Image 1 (spheres, rainbow, N blue to C red):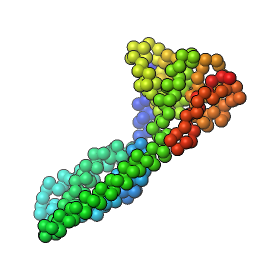
Image 2: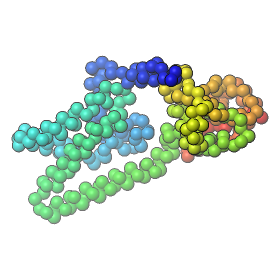
Image 3: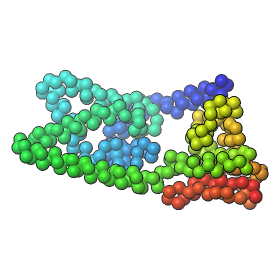
Image 4: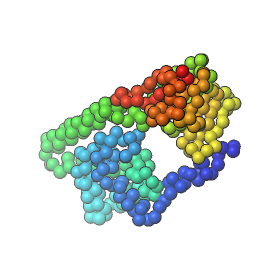
Length: 291
């Protein structure tokens, strides 16, 4: 398979996730324990976080502190060696993620979050048990459930409301409309912008293209953009071409970003078949053909 070249796949990936110096790793390590990642907004990538809520709720902060000191007390005062495992889990888990770029990275920190969840739960347990009166314990537990519900309510409101509008672009919004339009028989060829990751996957999914048909016509991208756009073309669909110099040929549909449309050399020779908009009503894709 000639398209699998080290400079396009493995080598590029290794360079992207280079370890860096110990000082850089040390700095990145502590980002996983920072208030921004844990409580304020989480991962900077909108695909990993809704950006208005952290990896944990602010409600968890006192429980994490209480739980951590409770675990340390059990380890050194009660000599409970099982707590050593939990502490080691918590502080060692971020190391592999800290040795890469794009930190803090929520998926890479997933293993770490289990330990913090246990610490937070233990802190809540200690808080409830601090009251000897059973009725106070029930009252505190009830208040914690209500507070957790309020934080969850805010999260769900943002997730199903503002998040859809603000970050539709991060989820390649509009691809279904593009594929549906490009499926029409009057188009002999379809040129799809490669401005998003692996656009051919969306065509395969929505067209339900049989694997033998795909393999019979696929051509792989031999340029440096291959890590983000592996396929150059299959069937009548093209994903690698000089977008700004698109020639208005009859029977060809071009799917391009607004920035490309504004800079087309032959813009006046094209007709806009469809303008796809994001949920916030901003322009997402222009589908154009020759006049």
